[in-house]
Image (cartoon, rainbow, N blue to C red; front, side, top):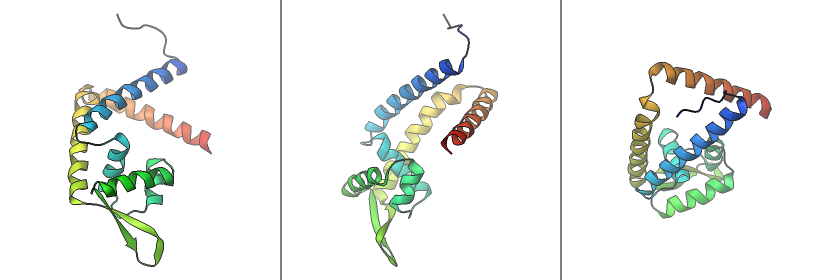
Length: 148
């Protein structure tokens, strides 16, 4: 039987958190099948779009600290998925690049993610997806106003 309680901001907030936790748990399981954590996949997939960026820029894109990115990059370098390359004229920074293995694994993860999206959000009517997109965008903008 569906829940008929009124949609209050608090109720929607908790539903959103639970939805996020459930989706994150499912993606965690799926990514483990190819040997990745969610954080590693996030880093690799970001590099597919912005190869050659620095760890600092990557940390900003992922909304994590430079220290968190450093540890992740270290493990992915050891696994042969990421290369650090010196930046001419800057002895303290390195440009991050995917190796052939890293690109292959990133693309596998992206396919797992796309399949998950198709089987969940993709089952909703286009009009619902448009509404969700507009609401999330307005919610994001409200958050930006609180951050400043």
